[in-house]
Length: 93
Image (cartoon, rainbow, N blue to C red; front, side):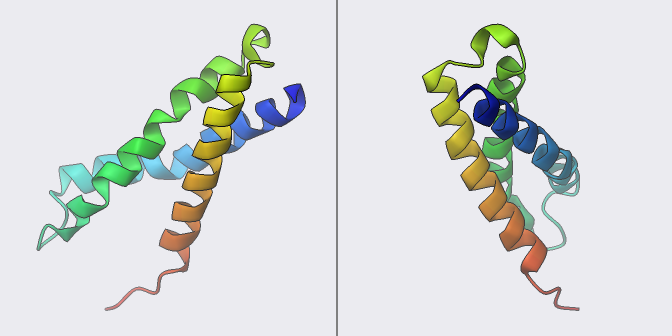
């Protein structure tokens, strides 16, 4: 469980490399021309919050914590599914 929890934390940090700038740009631009981009903001902020337990798990002391394992597992599933949804959606120009 120690290695899996560490791997989930690394995956969450890597996925948040995409979501943190997306959240900042989305809020800065007020959601685009019509403002519909702000509908995505609560989901991306929620994913950004999963970075906190991911960084905590990087310490050796907390790697076997079952609660952090469950939080990282839920965060990884949620962030990977939203990442796949955003990447695979065609752009309508």
